[in-house]
Image 1 (cartoon, rainbow, N blue to C red):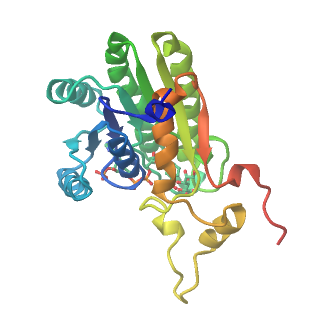
Image 2 (spheres, helix red, strand yellow; image 1 turned 120 degrees about the horizontal axis):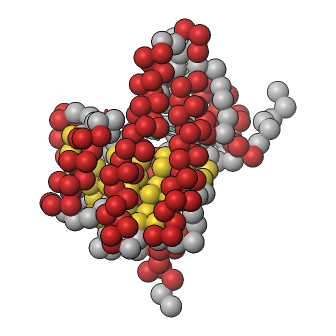
Length: 266
Ligand code: NAP
Ligand code: GCO
C-alpha cells in the first residue's frame, strides 16, 4: 500500500474561509501542495486581490471571493458559485476569525456579539451551507480553527474564549450528527502563532525591549518560541485527508506544548 497516498488531496475542492493571509493562507498553500483546488473568501476586494497575487507568486491557482461569513444568504450564494465554477466542496476549513481584547466589564454587548458572530455563528452558517453537498458526494472534511482559548481563559478575551469554546462543541456536534455520512469534523487549536492577529502582543516596547506578553508566551511554551502559520500545515493536511478518516470530533492542539505545561519556576 502506498501510505503517502492517504495524505493526498488530489481532486479535492477546498474552501478555506478568511485565507487572505495568516493561518488560512498557510493551510491553503499546504492543501495546494497536497493536490487540492483552493477556494478562499475574505471580507474585502482589496484583501482578495492582494491574496490572489500572493497565491500566484507561490504558484497556487486559487479562486478568491469576497464574502462576509456572517451573512447566511451571501454564504449560500458563495457555495453555489463555487459549485458552478470549481465543483462541490470536499473540504471546509472554518478559519475566518476576529478578536477584540477588551476587559469584559468595559466591553459593549455589540462588541461581544460581533466576535461571537464571526468566530462561532459563521462556522455554523458555512458548515450548514456546505454539508448537504458533502452528504450528496458521500464524504466530507470540516476543520474548525479553534484556539487554546477553547480550553483556557485570560484577561480581555471573554468574547473570543466563549466563541472558541463554543466552536469546540460545535465541532463535536457536527461529528455526532453527520459522522454517519462519512463526514469527519475536527478542530485545530493553534497555540500562539505569529500573525497579524497577535502582532499587538509582540510589539517592541519604547525602550526596544520585547513585549511582556511575548516574553511570557515564550517562557510558557516548552518549544520556547511562538508558532509560525507554517507549523499548522502538516496537521491541517492530515485532518483534510483520507489518513484521518476515523478521526472525528477531535481538537488537535498545535501549541508547542503550552497546554501540557505548568510553566517554569520564576
Ligand atoms: P488574521 O491574520 O487576523 O486573518 C483573519 C482572516 O479572517 C482574514 O483573512 C480576514 O479577511 C478574515 N475575516 C475576518 N472576518 C471576516 C468576515 N466577517 N468574513 C470573511 N472573512 C473574514 O488571523 P489569523 O491569526 O490568521 O487567525 C486565523 C484563525 O486562527 C482565526 O479563527 C483565529 O481566531 C485563529 N487562531 C489564531 C491564533 C494566532 O495566534 N494567530 C491562534 C489560535 C487560533 P480580511 O483579510 O478581508 O480582513
Ligand atoms: C490572545 C491571543 C490568543 C491567540 C490564540 C491562542 O489575545 O490571547 O490572540 O487568543 O489568538 O487564540 O490560541
